[in-house]
Length: 179
Ligand code: NI
Image (cartoon, rainbow, N blue to C red; front, top):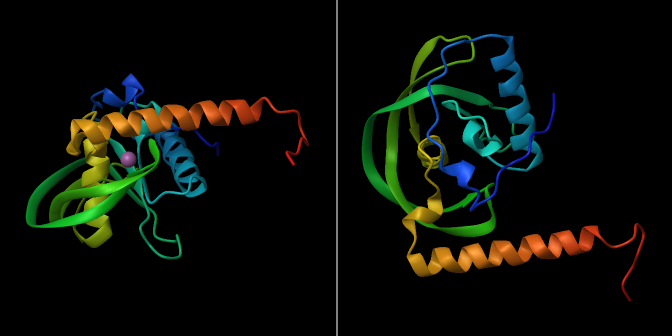
């Protein structure tokens, strides 16, 4: 397994529309395993292939408390949605930023697993929110797109500043301490 690099907003590659998965082979199984490792290490509760620069319709998710309920959604579709709810969302591609987004409260989804078998599932709570958030990624959409232009501009500037600070820290000699 390998940890993959997660693209960060405003990387234009996050705007790519993902293509359907057609081949369910060992390479796909490896990608799924790598995406789980990347998601758990981040740590996050969901990850879309788009975020690791693979433009296929593939999502991994684990919203369980003990991180022991991995779920894979390949070529996902929402068959039904019901109710609305507002949840504070974050995204591994928009690190450190959280804001409220309104989405359907429950969804019925159809998808394939890594062997290609079709399944249907009803999701609510965090799992429903997470699936909708990740499916947006596959369309090149980010949760910050639901926020105002002003907020989005502020987020962009903050992430840019954070990245510069990280780069500056990386240039400090190993073992250096400030005091
Ligand atoms: Ni995200």
